[in-house]
Amino acid sequence: MINTWYNSTIKMHKCSLRGFMENNLAKIRKEKKIGQNYLVEKLGVSRQSISSIENGRCTPSLELAMDIAYLLDMPIEEIFIHENRFK
Image 1 (cartoon, rainbow, N blue to C red):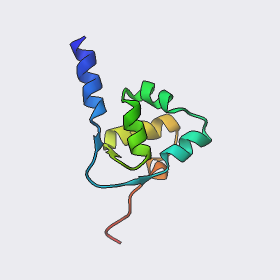
Image 2: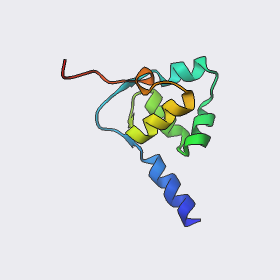
Image 3: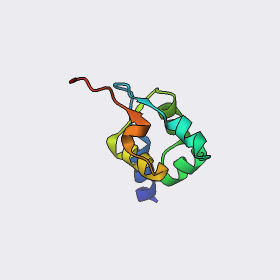
């Protein structure tokens, strides 16, 4: 029971309010006919976390972004757009 609580608590906090990274998550998810609940169940995060990422209110951790890309079977850079500051 404690392990389950610990794991879900840790996963819920894999979203940062610092920084901002644009993403195409909602668009891609809808094109692939995947509901938010599917990502919630597979990733072990809250629906609010997925919604916050899609709406740009938070940026996922690298681990969470990679897991999302894996589930959507797409390269991470096609989902999450990070402007290169070093051009």
